[in-house]
Amino acid sequence: MTEKLHSYDMALFSRSFLNCAQRHSIVMLAERRVRVAELFATCHVSSDVILDQCIRKRIPKYDFDFDGLTDADFQMAGVDRKSQFPDNFATARDTVLERIAADGFVLLAGDVFYLEHCPEFRNAHLFHLIIVTGYDAQTDTWAIIDDNPASVLCHYSYKTPDLAAFYNNNSVREFRTYAALATQDTAAALHRFRAHQKGRTDSLVLLTGIHDLLASPWNDPGVLFGHLGQAMSILAGSRRCFGAFLRDVAHQPDLANMADALSDRAFKLRELITFAGLGKMPPSRRIPARAAELAAAEADFSASLITLTQSLEEDETNDLCTHG
Image 1 (tube, rainbow, N blue to C red):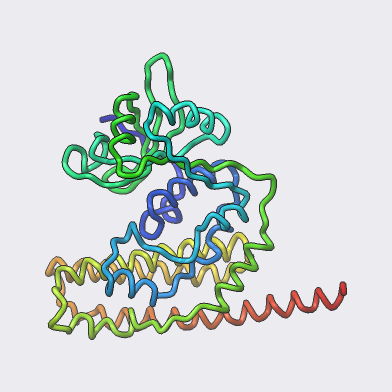
Image 2 (image 1 turned 120 degrees about the vertical axis):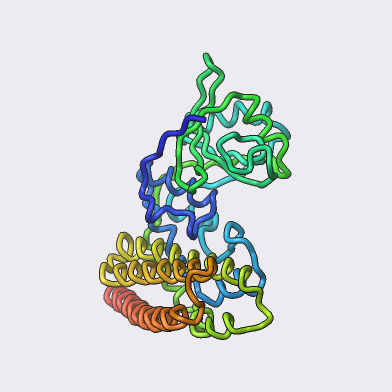
C-alpha cells in the first residue's frame, strides 16, 4: 500500500504520551491555527499516576488516563469536541462529509483488522481512530491520515467498502468532530494550570524506587522492562507537551527548556531500560543512577513551578486590588 508522510511536529505530537485520538485531533487542529498548547495546561502528569497505571495496574500506554485533554479543555482552546454514534457507515456518511467540509476532518473509529496499512491487518482486532480528510466521489476514494507501523502519521487512500468494514465491525461505532468556537480562553487555561499545580503531588517513587523494582524476585524481568519503558515514554512525552504550554501560553521559556530537558532525560532512561530488557546491559549498572538524577531534576522543576504559581497568584491579587 502506498503511503506519504504527513508534515507535522513529530517531537511534540508523538505517540509517546498522546493516544491516537489525542494526537490525531491535536495535529489537525494545530494546522487550523488553534492554539493547541493551551490543551497542555495539565500535562505535568505526576509520576505517581504513571507508576499506578503502568507498573501496578499494567494498563497499556494507549489507555493511560489523566485529568487533562477533557472536553472542557478543548472548549477553552476554542474547539467543540463531540462524538456521534450512527449504527453503520452508510448512516454516518453524509454527516461525516458535512463535518469534513466544515471542520476539515473527522476522526472515525473502527477495527484495525480491516485496514491494510495497519500491522494488525487480518491478524488482530483492536479499537482505533483514523483521520478522514476528504472523499472523491468519482473514484469512490476516501483520504485518510493515520499512523504507519512506526507511529508516524502518513496519508492513505481507501474505498468505501474498506472504511465501512472498519467502522461496521467495530465494538463501538463512533466518529468524533472538532468544530471551531468563536473564541479561545487563554485566561482559563492559565487558571487551569495554576489549579492543577496547587493540587498536584508527586513522591517520585517511580524513579527513586526503581532499584527495588528491578531487584524484586516477584517481578518478571521481561514484563517489567516493557512496562517501565512505557512509563518512561509517558513521562517523556508529557513533559514535552507541558513544555509547549509553558513556552507558548505561560511565556516561561526557561521553565519550558527545563521541561524539554526532563523529556530528553526520560527518553534516555527509556533507552537504557530497553537495552537491559534485550539483555545488552545489566539492569543494575546504570538505570538506578540515571533514575535518581532524573528524580532530582523533576523535584527542582516542581519547586520552580510552585514559585511560578505563587507569583501568578500574587499578580492576580494585585490586579484585583488595583482595579477594585
